[in-house]
Length: 93
Length: 460
Image (cartoon, rainbow over all chains, first blue to last red; front, side, top):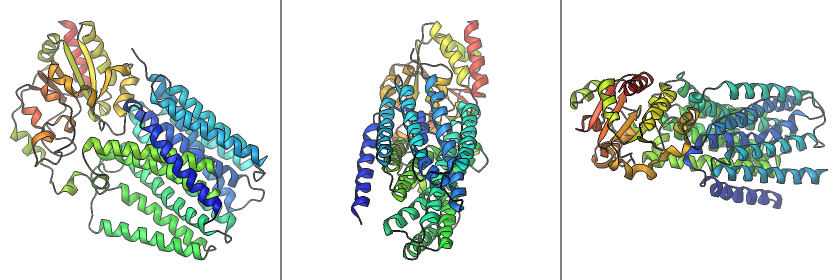
């Protein structure tokens, strides 16, 4: 295991703890928007998808990458928009 | 340039964290979602500047197609369909991770370092399970796939065997990193596993399944981050993974069941055979009221707690409920809502529906905040909820729901239950509350029954 990989595990573990701290503070009333909003965040795979779809030469990776771009974008755009639509409705008296 | 991109990824990760932090209050939540979206936009833009991205045709096609479908889904979906929508989005996230891992394998094989190889296998496994598992969850919520607990002989050995196949093929790939064939085996078996793992889970356990799949979609993004050596994917994925796990645990606690019990197929795995509907109705005698009688009881009340359940969502009764609340409040009656953690088909399902009907969120109270107030309340109005108000959970050790935290609706002076028929709830057991001396059944479709009730109260 090289140093670079170890650093990635570091980042992963610390991010998990950050996630736990952040999410335990979300009130139950917002749990559905939390799910759709965090769902949109998991669309971050778009980064990997763009890197594959944008390669110079056209290969199998390009097609796989483009398909990944489609699904990740559905996740990102759909997730953020639907979350906003829900949060707009939450009003106090 | 590479350095600028790395810094931008860091900023984007921080924006995700800030966005999630603002979700801690409904007042700032919308702003938080926006901040998170800005983080995503930043990540996308700087990735396009990456020196490895040289052609844009395929990207443009993908972005346009994906964005249009996503936007269309987000605008069209009704609030009652939100669990399905979230389920499907989870699945697409998982599929995207699988595709990226496949593309990366194709790109770098056979020169694959051990760490990357393992990360690719994990991405394929988790992404694949997330995708087909979510599709099945979507089907169950949409009514396309049976909502029942599905069981067949050899179920668990089969799943264990398939997992072993993935591990074996994975080890083979790590040793011989040029065998695309085995990569396809891992992918295919993972997809099958997703179906088999979610199929046994019952419809009312979907809050747990959806939360868990939400977590998987995050972990899949993280493992893809390990494949690409990209810290932002690792961070964002881990945040989502943690979020899904927390929601999963809250849902399990709300049912007093272990995660294992839910995953292995619901109440029945505890060895309890659900009672037949016919037996159920014979065992308890209930008093029923019509809309006129119910209206008189409400007219005399000073405080009402409404307990909504999945039945309210099915009947789309949230707007009728809002009208009823307005009428009662005009009469000076205190109206509040008690929300059980597992009410509905996903975490927070009831809250979203009631928010859609313009009911202020400060009227919605969580179980632990309102449970002591039932005893001082004139009427509990149960709309399409069942197991979450069954007092058997408190005292009947033989009941499959024994130990599940419930709303103390039975302790209020009068309990009015709106229900279609005497059919039992998800757990398949009769609800002894219905036979209590202070309980009144008001039979009918929730939406219709509530509208009639509002009409009658207005007449008084």
